[in-house]
Image (cartoon, rainbow, N blue to C red):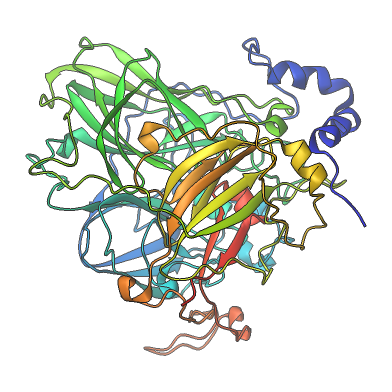
Length: 603
């Protein structure tokens, strides 16, 4: 029986064999004090472009109870000095999609249509991954997921319910939930990363009578031009300005890489843009839409800002901060006051989160900045930061206390290693996506999920359908834990309790992590505990365990079609229905291979 080898030992041995005489350069490049101009020869690097020459795009807003989203292959200019390059976008946008604003509690019917042709990152698809076919390069499927939506299973964008080019599907989103900062993105099996990276993502903001999004709202929050969605990403570009998901020649083209730190900041589809701001308060709806990196966000002058909400709505009161860590898939609602800055001053939104070990050993360093704010000589929103957001007359009620669980469930996050390049796959519970050995919580129960991360790296874990509260993070003696519970070969469920192997007290979540979330940063070598209530069918208004068809009707090139009829695509030979939802790491490379599992919420 083969056993996973110790990851650091393998990577260092592989480094000696693969990198040879270049190793000293990669080690120098990985050091925090890397001198300017030294770049690792083990990495591809984006072409140098001048920052802060393109103005930040304002994403268009759409409203209505019946909408359509069309995913299309297009071209996009990321920077003034780069040519247009292949990309993906929604609804005629050359990159990303419009911001959808919708009232909480009002149903939304959305027709999603796939009109893509050849994929911009076709050469980087790995056909050895679960569900990926060679045909995806020229006819890429898609699956639309409303991240954070309380959504019936047949409208959730299940990764195996694929819409092929020429096809469409109707999604019914009840949105019978509180206000929040949702987002939508592709979720197609095995190619989520290349689809999202190429452009298939956008925001959905739920509003109510308190957070109306209009001037004069009861909460006294900035609105109109003073509320700005920021879709943050980091990327690599080729010499000719094309998007690239390849970071290193160590992994051949078309091979799954495991994730890489980009060297170029992109906000709302522009490289290092600038935003003119008035001297007043702004509300920034920030989304980490990166494929891989956790960021430690701060302003270059270390100015204070306030966190007023996260994934699913407002906190009880603003939380003052000078920095915060934001993982892929997480959202945060910020107030930033530019009134104290003089006209003509500038300040940058920055990041200094060090790359994880396996990225640093190749020479990857933190992508240092995203955008610049330029203070204009004009007054802005002047009402100031509210003292309270909940719990007083005219405000929403306070956040409820965290419920007491009746079930304790242990799940694990690991990266089994073996002698190949790249040397790891990613795994939840030591299983692959096709495993039938899934979690099956019962409707109406409150559970504590102890997410046991034996890797040294952070992984943002997202559960579809439900929201949860973060209880805290407890350090883990990972070596002792693994010695006492040897990890079996991948495919055998492995979820031993961490009791007896904890290295200290539980650390409570940051104040700004309060409230309801759908994704949690699970730090390396910790047990992250969350409290989840799994709703009943009666509460939801739909059966969360109802089966639904895997097959999606779609037009096929060259196939006979008639009005009102669409020929089934090649997925139609799979006759089994789907059931339930998924939970996964939101590092998109990890999700694709194979840190994603199905789960069901059973009666």
